[in-house]
Image (tube, rainbow, N blue to C red; front, side, top):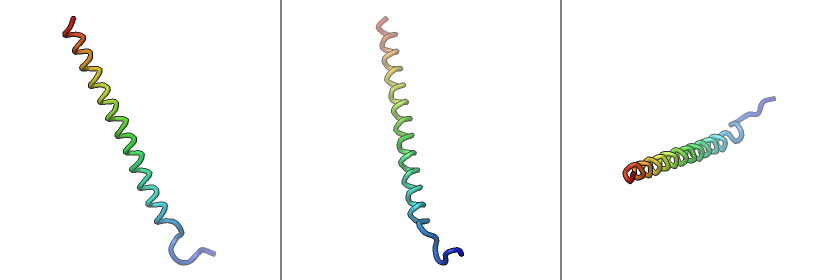
Length: 53
Protein backbone atom coordinates (compact mmCIF):
# COMPACT_ATOMS: atom_id res chain seq x y z
CA UNK A 1 0.00 0.00 0.00
CA UNK A 2 1.54 3.38 -1.00
CA UNK A 3 2.10 6.02 1.64
CA UNK A 4 -0.22 8.98 1.84
CA UNK A 5 0.97 12.57 2.11
CA UNK A 6 4.13 14.17 0.82
CA UNK A 7 7.10 12.09 -0.16
CA UNK A 8 9.84 11.61 2.36
CA UNK A 9 13.14 13.55 2.05
CA UNK A 10 12.48 15.06 -1.38
CA UNK A 11 13.26 18.57 -0.12
CA UNK A 12 16.51 17.50 1.52
CA UNK A 13 17.56 15.54 -1.55
CA UNK A 14 16.93 18.55 -3.79
CA UNK A 15 18.95 20.83 -1.48
CA UNK A 16 21.77 18.31 -1.29
CA UNK A 17 21.89 17.94 -5.06
CA UNK A 18 21.95 21.72 -5.50
CA UNK A 19 24.77 22.15 -2.99
CA UNK A 20 26.81 19.30 -4.45
CA UNK A 21 26.45 20.76 -7.95
CA UNK A 22 27.65 24.13 -6.64
CA UNK A 23 30.66 22.45 -5.04
CA UNK A 24 31.52 20.49 -8.19
CA UNK A 25 31.22 23.61 -10.36
CA UNK A 26 33.42 25.55 -7.94
CA UNK A 27 36.15 22.91 -8.11
CA UNK A 28 35.98 22.81 -11.92
CA UNK A 29 36.22 26.60 -12.11
CA UNK A 30 39.22 26.66 -9.77
CA UNK A 31 41.01 24.01 -11.83
CA UNK A 32 40.31 25.93 -15.03
CA UNK A 33 41.58 29.19 -13.50
CA UNK A 34 44.74 27.47 -12.30
CA UNK A 35 45.40 26.07 -15.77
CA UNK A 36 44.92 29.49 -17.36
CA UNK A 37 47.15 31.13 -14.76
CA UNK A 38 49.92 28.57 -15.29
CA UNK A 39 49.68 28.93 -19.07
CA UNK A 40 50.05 32.70 -18.71
CA UNK A 41 53.10 32.29 -16.47
CA UNK A 42 54.72 29.81 -18.86
CA UNK A 43 54.04 32.10 -21.81
CA UNK A 44 55.57 35.05 -19.97
CA UNK A 45 58.68 33.06 -19.02
CA UNK A 46 59.11 31.83 -22.60
CA UNK A 47 58.86 35.39 -23.88
CA UNK A 48 61.50 36.51 -21.40
CA UNK A 49 63.79 33.66 -22.49
CA UNK A 50 63.37 34.66 -26.14
CA UNK A 51 64.09 38.33 -25.37
CA UNK A 52 67.33 37.58 -23.54
CA UNK A 53 68.70 35.38 -26.32
